[in-house]
Amino acid sequence: MRASSLIFCGAAAAAFVGMAPSAHAQVTPHTYPLASTQNEHLRPDTAASVGLASIMLDQALGELQEAVDDGDIKGAVLLVARRGRIVLYNSLGTRDGLNENNPSMPSVPMPADGIFDLQSMTKPFTVFLAMKMQESGNYPGFNINNTVATYFPEFAVSSVNNKSSVTVKDLMAYISGEDLDYFPPVTDPGGIFDDADPWHTLLDAPLAHPRATKVVYSDLGYRILGHVLETVGGESLQDLMQTYIFGPLQMTDTGFQPWLNMPAKQDRFVGTAWSATRGRYLRGEVQDETDYFLEGDGPAPADHLTGCDGLFSTAMDLAKFAQMMLNRGKHRYPCTPGSTSICETTLLTAQAVLDMSTIRTGSLHLLRPAWTYSENLLYSRKGYGWEMWDGGSWPGGEATSSVAYSKTGGAGTLMVIDPEPRREMFAILLTNHGLPKFDEFTVDGTGKMEWPEFNWMINDIRALEVMNKVHGSIIW
Image (tube, rainbow, N blue to C red; front, side):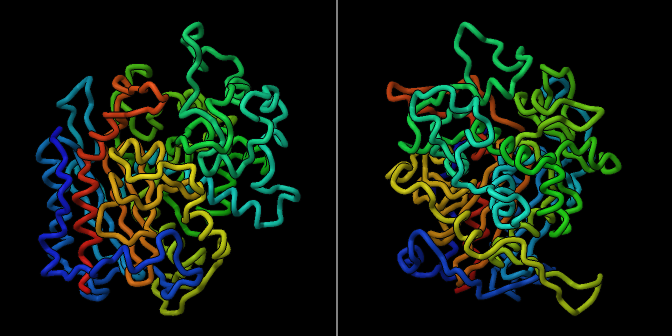
């Protein structure tokens, strides 16, 4: 691992590229236009076609190559698009990440269509599904303003911290009062791993702090959110997302439990790490042990999937999702392969997309720039499932507008979307870094958590350097 450079590496190139003067000051800080100026469909093109400097994009790839050469990651895929044009789509290194049990394990070159463990990049999809189920009219009475107890009465057994009033929307915005994860007392060190009814235990767990008093990033909250949606929908998250997201967007390489749902594609599964718990190297298996325990390993589909982690996908499939977000909920695509006629499908209303991707946490989030990446993840301002632009330690970089938003996946993945009309671009960085360790997770006297290994992971995948080059490549 190497120390991160926090110097804005795009600044030196600004004279060549022409950084927009006072870019953040010219944009309304917390919102963007409801209507997109560019409803585009994805297709390959040159950087120059959309006003990007190819030399800067080459430098972004160079940063990733340095990460591979230094041994911080084994391989990566980087995709960049602006206004519907895919201007960079490259893979480098090898498919499989470090195997601590066998560091010299051979691996094949990284495929551009590698299928990655997204970890927490699952969360925006869970949120999108919730918004779509509310809008669809197919689930009468379902509303994100409903309480969780509407669907699980045992959730409200405890009256401590006003738990009975926690809504589905609170879970989506990380203001429910749920802890980062389920942390059993020292008298129950096995936690849910020894639990015959783990979902009941998760629902029954007390809140860590009063509802709607502060932002705390919560995998536990998103597991419960996914459980609500499966209960309302009467199907698994896999099937619901296939109906409302993957199918309409033609995301054919995306899903939970890929060993079950796309076994013919196993040569493209990207490896993440050796699991001492499972006694094997992980390819096509969610790395997080709690999610793996809850979802199981088949051969039949899991009874319940988790809304926080578990999705696997490719850069190209994620690009379809990102472009739909830029198009304010519309998917545009050739009506037939190779056709010049363009068809359009609306997956979600523009207002719902705007609600997802603008600040939903009022003044409950950290009211200053984040000092570390983990502080940004855990406490800074949120949309529904997304991290919003932050002038401090934000992995999206310093060259975006102030209405950009991002999502990090703990195993070394990142998507940054900038809907500001002068930019309208996104970048997807997928690596096989693997989950940071939790053995140095600390809690200070105020209860605030810090995750040093997460900070190192963001440094290792060169998130800041890559995103600064990518989003700083606009020729103004």
